[in-house]
Image (cartoon, rainbow over all chains, first blue to last red):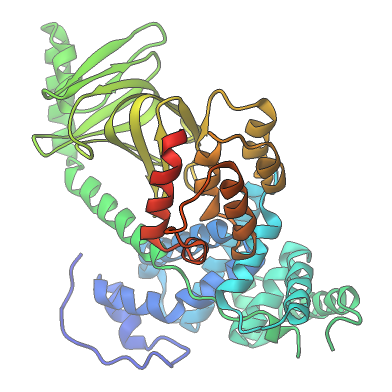
Amino acid sequence: MHGPSHVRVVNLSDREAGAEIVEACRKGDRLAFRELYDLYKDRVYSIALYFFHGDRTAASDVTQQVFLKLLANIGQYRGEAVFSTWLYRLVVNACLDEARARKPRAVAYERSRMEAAAGAGSQESGYEQAQVAESVRAAVASLPPKFRIAVLLRYFDELSYDEMAKALRCSMGTVASRLSRGHKMLAERLKGVVE
Amino acid sequence: MSIRDHLPLVEAPESVWEAIEAKIRDHERRAMRSPSRWRWVFAAAAAILLAATGTWWFERQHAGWIETSASARTTLRIGDIGSVDIGPNTRLRVVADRADQHRLDLAHGSIYAKISAPPRLFFVDTKSGTAIDLGCEYAMNMDEDGVGTLRVTKGWVSFQWEGRESLVPAGAMCRIRPSGGPGLPYFEDAAPDFVQSVDRGAVDAMLGSARVRDTLTLWHLLSRVAPGDRARVYDRMASLVPIPPAISRERALGLDPDTLNRLKEELAWKW
């Protein structure tokens, strides 16, 4: 599966993978796959991390699954949708599948996990801010899965309603409804905590 | 600050890429080994021939998986370094059998390994991680989902999964599970309350019921709890076993590998 070893200049600040990288990946170029991974890994991991209330193991599992599925199925990507939309469909499926699989299990270390997640990427300082952040994350994690994933997709890539509809395999109206209800629930749960 | 500001982008750990690469390599290795249709036909004919000549056991031991029935047991010699007793309903195969590495792949079932060799020469891969012999005897069982236990009777075994390691000494055990890595190791003579708290991941209960010997578990716990919880884990260990001043508490809380190693060596006198 080793492809051409030419050097490709990639601007990692780009939010969307170029067609050239995706095409190279489709042809089995391992370097291109690594570039795609580098471009999206943090967004995929973060969405999964907040989806699973700071469970780093679940986030790692989902990130692995997403990129392995991406590698296995990229031949099916025909460019009919923005690449990230196609990728996020994999993320949505992986998160919802993992959530279903994990449902019966007891949740242990929940508090510790969330604190660890917060510590991993947060710039917050001070006890009060940390408490607010924890409240926000807990509120997000408490949303019903379909609302939660919609909210996280919106936050992490600012997808349009059309793109979100494709990723979530639902109508734009449903997207609007899930976002609206999700935000309303968050607002209620975080009344007095966040502006 | 808005809600969005409290959900910062978190960097994916390097272990995720390592796991992806390992799975790709594994997939490619299997694909290379996967025989063509004609080879399957040939293999089937060969298997029939072998069965007819009564040499079925040879084929099973050398060309693929070794499987035992519900009432069968067998023993596998591991070069000149030891042996593995294979329990009933077990499926495993030899992946490497070289002077510098002996490696088995356990799909499910139970084994008892007796190895007398330098550390890190004998490995057992499972879907939940790899048991690495550090000079020992141990029993391991695992179901088809990758759930099981590792019990060490002599020496030490390291069980590793994606960068997470449980070091299990003689008299101790740890649970094996398909995701999340090996459980915290604990001594089998630990109090039932302590064992329950380990299984539940109840940090406070673990700290409250730990004995001197249970610092084995607490030492592993130190690097698995949230940063904010580390101090009380460390302090509980220090209350059970005097820790020399040369071991820096701050560095231990920062999970400095050398300091953790020195701390382990200090605590291990009591294990």
